[in-house]
Image (cartoon, rainbow, N blue to C red; front, side):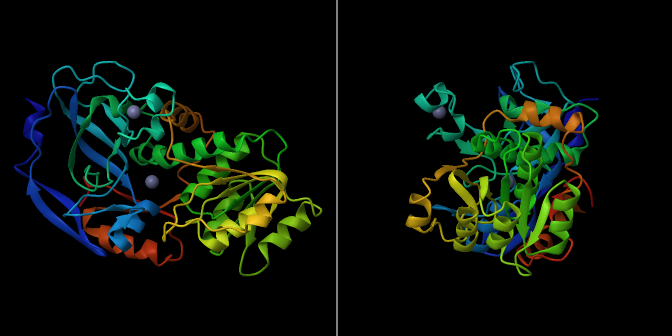
Length: 362
Ligand SMILES: [Zn+2]
Ligand SMILES: [Zn+2]
């Protein structure tokens, strides 16, 4: 029978009604997909640090959530129905039952930045899970077909959702220009830090330091090949300077919410002429560093803005076992657990790194 029957007349969604106010609600079922669109049954959605920013403040950067809104941009699903003339990200017809990972960014594909190969900088883009474009903490979501990347059977739904943060790690390390044998420091061992770690290692970084204050995250960093540095047990700048015989590292990646401390730490462990990549998003929307510390050593600073066309690489690296995304995912839950999981993540509940929501599970 037609797969339309699999969708009920209502569907469940988690909506943010204001700062720290997430509610599970029954909403009308989404309309059938228009031409070029696919309606997905969502199978896995990661809870991201940027979702936490929006949850805590009701905004991210200068984008404010103005009405009840569904977050969630790290997601995968199964095509339940495709509209007429719907093609996937590779330009192939998209058919029902295809498992896909979804690129949340929707660049215009026509402006100067898109034409120049920087769709991540497109000023006209929208982004699933950033107001007002709905995200995936819900049972069904209709998306443009050309944002859907079919995933091989070898990838789990969870891995498919994790391709989004891995893509950020890929883009950040692309910006870092790491050469084999470059020393690298990563500030922050959350999901993005651990994705950057794995990409830096693949790029040939050695030695590779990761700083954090949470033991379970540092344990995972160590398991993934880094030298862990606990910032409450030791001065991380002194420790990295000692490890590098006073020279400093070639590249530092800041992956810890861009707090003043995190940025200062990343700046201060760099060698003269070194390169800083800022990946974290600042809670107070300010980037603060000591001018002389950056100027005297002639540092180069790159700001990581999302990613560009990283899904094919992310799929291949995951399929071939070059990256371990399962090491980062510590929690699995259904829609009913989302509000508690957001609070757990904000509180750095021991053992939690990445929580993945499965809207199709109770
Ligand atoms: Zn994210
Ligand atoms: Zn554009």
